[in-house]
Length: 195
View 1 (cartoon, one colour):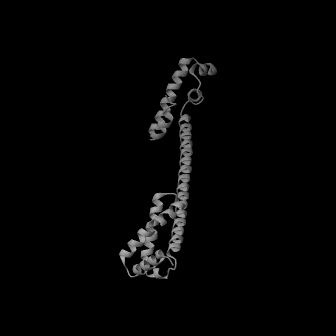
View 2: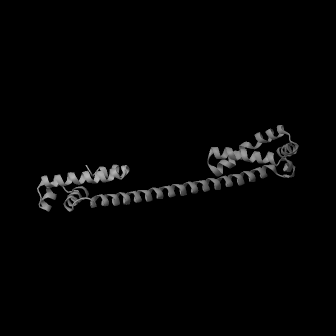
View 3: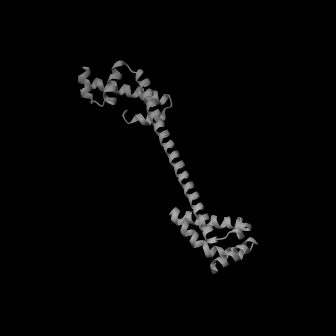
């Protein structure tokens, strides 16, 4: 048995008797080894430092059992590997949970967007029911289909001025309907094509 193991054995017995100086000596003798093993597994300085703290906290917590350890160097290496693997499992679990939350949030956003779009379309259809057939045709051709007023006038057999009058009235009624029903958000959404 070499000097290091004898020193470790003496330190372990002293720590078992609540000797803090011996614990400090053991810590400085093995902390670099523990850190190196932890880094090999975690590849992260913060995680490795936490593992060092956990390993030595465990040593102090179960200090009365330390004299039973035959090869402390091998024992502390094994404990460190177990703590590192536990840390990796925790990191993987947290990452999976974060990904799951992100996916749920993303799906909810898509559902909300789809619901809002359907709601806007439904409100707009209700507003269009309030228009005369001619006003509705003019509105749909200009604002929904994107045709210019001259093309709409030619297709409906109306003058461009008449198309402008129908469109002005239609826009005013649709805006008024949405505003009266307190759909300010919907107004913001559809206002861009109600200009």
